[in-house]
Image (cartoon, rainbow, N blue to C red; front, side, top):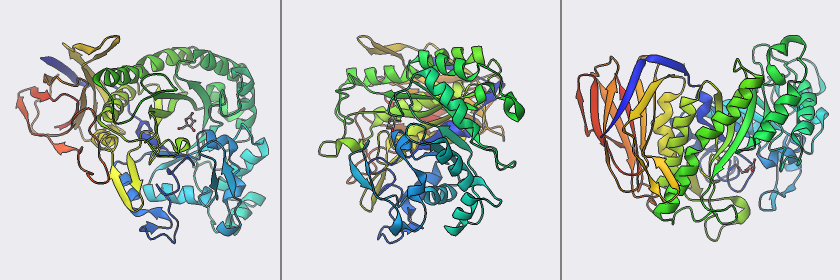
Length: 504
Ligand code: AHR
């Protein structure tokens, strides 16, 4: 038996809701078909946005949405995506499948989508192939309320009032698809480009995000921070070390080698443990990048923004390799559960994270096929974890956590985190990483003797997934199989499961 100790009195930090954020790129069928079908579609929509998808997304409380990329961002020229749709430029999406991008989803459509979702906005600018002027005019177009060429253009295009940009990314993966730069070169460009990300709205400051590392590239983190913090920023932003509010981190989990990541739905138990082993590595990445950040920003003013994370497998057979369309199983659910628990536990540094990607691309919460839509196991995890958003992380740890796995892929059997909501409810999320073994768990609170407990479970065979024919193979279910006795609650976590509790 394992004991999960929870000291609900010891609050360790605030879980920024944006940790539960999402990413949507002009890639495959994420934007087009997945989120946006256009006003004239037979698929029910509101101003072009799929109603079924938006409704489902609202259920998991989307806190923030990143757009338009990804690699696409450093090729995107925003002026191609404004004005009458019939006049918008058509281009080839060279990164993703070589298909025609007709720019029918642009700035106005993105803000409409975020309004419908009720979420914050994260716009990613173009450094790789764009100019400072282009970036600064985009900010002006979106956020300026006075008399100016870009504000006039926005009004001509039908939007009188400015929008709010909550986060602005100055380039994406500039060590790779965003320009193949060195950290020092990018660091200097960052300093220059961010200068012109003007704060036009005193009521809605834009938080700037600098392009951070891929996975374990600590050299990039060090080089960029060193360059950006080389001299103190003068003026009102002097408070921000390195002219930035956030530094990104990208980390994708895949078994095997990059060239052969394997099927999303057909894998053996060794591959299961290899995948989860790599998911657990997120903890080390946060610690080590965080240690470098601590040197330049000891007060933790710069957030670590893990703005791309998730599973990356081989595409579904018969689909366009450039569309990155993959199915989603209980393995994805466990990766999501493990990762979100890690983010919660590091909420002092991790201020945002965006799963890649929202619909139909990589580890999606929703898949669509024409008018049909299914929720993936990952969707259910986000649903079960949503109460952590905006809650206070509390101290928790497992005693008697077995190490399990196959060959070199050894992982702790249980993954967990706990938080307390504003109203005092304790939220607990637990994953059992074993493919075969159920595990009895006793939760032991410091003082709380629960009077009310609600719980849910998501479980299934390791390869279990939902299909358009069988959309409910894997779904969240109420969980009543627990016993409460004083300060203790005992239950058995089924093999291959996520269990969530809300305790009062
Ligand atoms: O999410 C798919 C791609 O992965 C993004 O465009 C890029 O930033 C990353 O390499």
